[in-house]
Length: 311
Image (cartoon, rainbow, N blue to C red; front, side):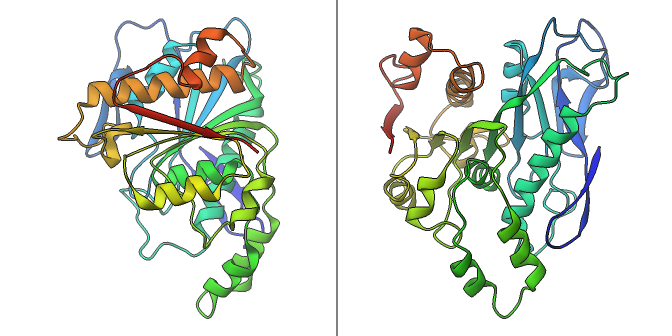
């Protein structure tokens, strides 16, 4: 776990970190995240197969009322392709410790959580087997639902502080507004993947997207009016939008089933696009095969509709 102090409010947060990495172990205790979730294909506290160089890092943000291990399918697939994955449990916003109503400053606090997670991985103790073997200067961030909103925020749009302050009154306090005002985009984040997560006008105005420092790859359910509005509003940023015909909100995590699209299909699509985007942004690959996936030249699956805009 890691601990940090939230800028503005001074709140001290303790984050349990869920970390996926390669191992040579063939047996072990299966990983249980909580009373309702376990990963039957990952061992708990397995020995580390140390990367030969620096492994790329994916930091994942779970949705409201979920948990860091909720998208273990994507995490395992990333590890199979040479990545390290870290997903914090967002304190006070998980299945086991929900806060109702959510704190006013939770959108920016979740982003601070991810920055603290990257800091932790960048400063592992020297005796940790992964110390010096994780690339933390170029990082991919992904998230689902409310975590998808966090991913958008990590991409660096300007907060609409006037609107946030107007929404705040009269219930929140100045320290929470300070947390928004003090937030700075993390230059280590070079790409973000939002899995059915949006970004409201209550946080970012249309012109705020022009400030984004990282491109966005966004996967969503189809035919949602607010998603079309967000795609139009974000015209000032580099955004690729993939809609999955028949997709459901949890098609991208597998937490729950989807009666209109098999999880085998949607989870494979999610992993394919996420990893291709990471290879391009984090590893700086211009492999034609990777670019063809990302621009729609290669059909990943017939259920996909892909659109893109850039400034």
